[in-house]
Amino acid sequence: MAREATILDEWEAFVGNFGAMRIPVHTVTRRACQLLSVTGLGSYDAVHAATAEHLGARLITHDRLLARAVERFFGSIIGRSEEQHGSDS
Image 1 (cartoon, helix red, strand yellow):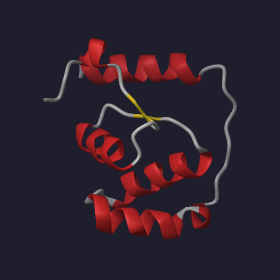
Image 2 (cartoon, rainbow, N blue to C red):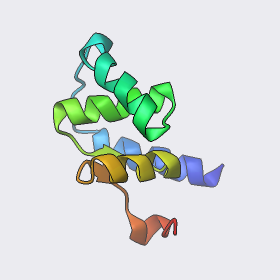
Image 3 (cartoon, one colour):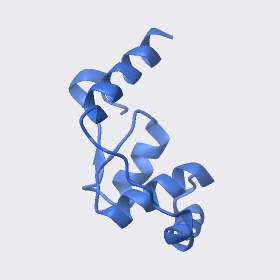
Image 4 (spheres, one colour):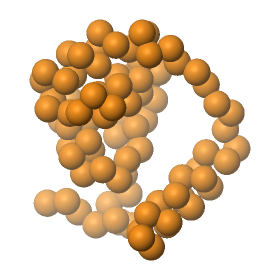
């Protein structure tokens, strides 16, 4: 539980100064469906990855499976501090 609290604290510190942006899900649905079939991601993760790709934004996650899939298929949109959270290898 302490790890989750730390992650939430880091997330709130990171996004605290940014405004929200709404992206209609239909904007990324087709790409999310493609990602479901080629990455093995679940539907929520595929929508997150497709949205990040659509925006040209970095996807920051502590989810190891999502991080690996995104690194493999997108490379530069993944962000994860290996120094803080250790290597997944």
